[in-house]
Amino acid sequence: MQPLLNAQQIHDADTYTIAHEPISSVDLMERAAKAFEQAFTARYGDTEKSIAIYCGTGNNGGDGLAIARLLTDYGFEKVDVKIARFANKFSDDFKSNLQRLSQTRIPITNFTSVAELKTEPADIIIDALLGNGLNKPLAGEYAQLVQQINNWHKTVVVVDVPTGFYSEGEINPDAIVIKADLAITFQQPKINFLLPDSKHAIKNWVAVDIGIDRNFTQQLNSPYQYLEESDIKKILRPRERFSNKGTYGHALIVAGQPETMGAALLCSSACVQAGAGLVTACIPQSGLVALNSYMPEIMAIVREGDLQPTIDWTKFSTMGIGPGLGKDDNALALLTDILTNYTKPVVIDADALNLLATHKQLWACLPKGSVLTPHMKEFDRLFGEHKNWWQRLQTAMQKAKELQIHIVLKNDYTIIASPDEKLYFNSTSNAAMASGGMGDVLTGIITALLAQKYSPLEACLAGVYLHGKAGDDLALPGKLWVVLPDKVAAQVPVSMAALMV
Ligand SMILES: NC(=O)C1=CN([C@@H]2O[C@H](COP(=O)(O)OP(=O)(O)OC[C@H]3O[C@@H](n4cnc5c(N)ncnc54)[C@H](OP(=O)(O)O)[C@@H]3O)[C@@H](O)[C@H]2O)[C@@H](O)CC1
Ligand SMILES: Nc1ncnc2c1ncn2[C@@H]1O[C@H](COP(=O)(O)OP(=O)(O)O)[C@@H](O)[C@H]1O
Ligand SMILES: [K+]
Image (cartoon, rainbow, N blue to C red):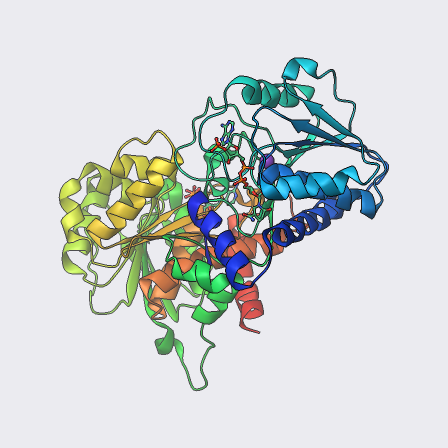
């Protein structure tokens, strides 16, 4: 689990590392510049390309000066350094690196106003103007310079954080920010990199390790955590000797209408693939043939017209409710029946979420520890409109605590909010997975893990990670352009086994 820190905590962690490793501040800057150089040359290794490095006069600018030297040592012959002297304030490490750079033959241009700049002939621009020290929106010369750089439409690679971009807090869509093709960021992705609101500023990012003290960052107890493969390996348990289907629980999937039987099939088959010992699907009568032919392993409870199905509440280890269920009176009656009679944690998705949104009296019946899996629109239907994703994060944290539930807010980096006010960002999944029915598969996987007696938090973390990992294993690198949900479901046991070794 990697703690995601805010700008002040990052500054404190840098300071702690300098004092306790110990390492001098300028050597830590050198280490950061080296890590940048390696990530940069791995992607832009053509030394024929010309590079212009725009530097501020703080530590982000200091990084830029060190990077100019390291890229030249690497073999780039056309490196230009341009220093924006908009303020008469220089960090010590900027000054040391400027002195070192002036002993090389790398050309340095100083400018005090954007009007002094002509066109920019370089192929690649490196932005080392402002980083983590941003403390107010860009204005004046800085704002003009950033607009000028954006208007050149060059390839832009940023050092740590795009100039003008806040690492946390609400993103102002009108803020003036460098538009980065790639952000090479130090130690950890900044929290806002993981939110869709950053799309206009950052096309891609990569985090590089600069050896910041991990014990210190862990004890800060940040509410924001980034999931790593090692976390999931710790959660997953091997299938036991002498185990049988009863060992792995019996899940009930309540889903489907005649027109949306696919959702029920995808959800219940994913539940089988993710290891539930037994799976029963509660589906409309008209879907029975489809269910039996799609996956004979799944049993059925059929729903006929207005008749409510009889469910033996003691029989099931858990339930996944909602995919393709519809929002009519029968669906509402069934959901109400389940929530008033069943007491173990359940997974609520899709139409069941929409019913919860319009029937607030049902909230009180939600079994404690249950899991809600909304995408952004469902989330706003449940909890009200939000202007941006930062607001959604705060609501998710608050509601998970207030209702003692887990909220899986689906997205590129799906966010899991737990009742203890933590937000976990998933690190797997990819855009090839943007296909209808993908969420139904996720619901099936989380339900399967609950059935296997993983705690609700473990089921959310491992379920979301596995779902994305199965999609990554199918799509990356350069494999499938589009990954379909049933393929993800079928890949889950393969990806799961690979994680167990
Ligand atoms: N040893 C370390 O700590 C390491 C740090 N590292 C690197 O340092 C970077 C952080 O450096 P930093 O703290 O010097 O801040 P930086 O982003 O260069 O800004 C400089 C100054 O600009 C000012 N300013 C702020 N907003 C402004 C605005 N809108 N318009 C105009 N001015 C504005 C503000 O000064 P103030 O306004 O407060 O006087 C601020 O102090 C970090 O991203 C990473 O690249 C790595 O080398 C690893 C080791
Ligand atoms: N661009 C993307 N990058 C990563 N994951 C994605 C992307 N688009 C969709 N997904 C994943 O696919 C699932 C889509 O869920 P949802 O919107 O509920 O789909 P549906 O309702 O069609 O089943 C989520 O788990 C989400 O994380
Ligand atoms: K920058």
